[in-house]
Image: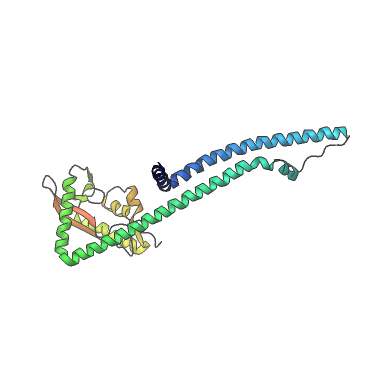
Length: 262
């Protein structure tokens, strides 16, 4: 019984930690509404208290034959400040939840970015070791086989008509077919590297725009920097119907922190 209760508590703790940003955000939204409602109620109550005080003052002044004096702002504040404690407390709690959700999300994003960077460095070191052990030719052969497997597994993708060339090309990163030439692809690569020399970084969308492919949300958020220059790798493969095809990949994958030098 006790062991089962402990297990359930541990599960609840795990779920709470995993969904903490969502929970705090939901509390923040509810708190915003509650603050508005409580503030409205407090305002009505405060108005009633002030009215009652003024009526009482008028009655007392009539009995004493004195002209009633209008209450000052300080006196009004002393009279009604307790009514605004609940909305003030709710507002503080709401702000705290919003800040907590933002901090937790920032920490998770930072952790994921670090993990992605570590994985990318490990993969880069692995590729360098493969080239060192097997040689450039064998490395290119492996890349060609990977590209061939990718195209075989994705035979029915629509072809994007871009450029005037008649060579079928396949973008391995986004899985799209398009028509282009080797010259156009190399020209786009040179433009990206020139853009990096001018502005220290360049997005992946810029490259796709140069070869006539539509950018995506992902390509807008990744790219290359001066410390991570772009290099296109091309593999020659065959489609399912035996058409020659140029499979395009990058020797250095675009990263999310490509514009850190700005």
